Length: 187
Image (tube, rainbow, N blue to C red; front, side, top):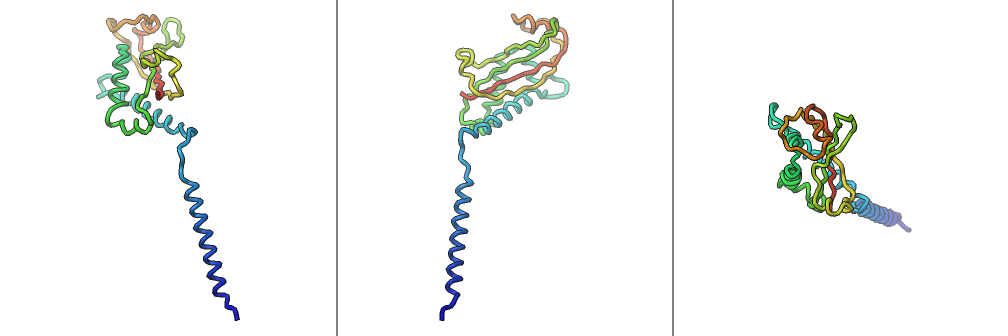
């Protein structure tokens, strides 16, 4: 007489084997592989870091002082902006861990200020800073991210650094909001 106990053990073994194969397939199939299509993740990180830097630069030390971003724009201090944005904040040891996530610490920036010409009411731009590579080779501007911040400028007193750009000088005597736009890309 044949007993069916052996058949149950065989079926249980086959079922256990299928479960192990299915589990192995799911585990190996769910591992993430970094592909070029996932580069938007690093762009999002770069955008967040850039936005945070502009926010930090636009935060005054107390309620009566101006933020460093307002002071740099008021004085049209191009090198000071680069030193502050890239040197003090982006490449600081505190944000260095975030920079290594981008795969490259060679970040180039181009900063443009958009404002309203108070003489002609036209919207104009002034390039506050552009990385040296961008000036030498404009085609080096690869895919990048853009971060912006609205900054309130008070009426500026005469005697500050004069620019050759007449439209920028036309807004000296009246307060207004300007849009600071920083384009960042990896080299």
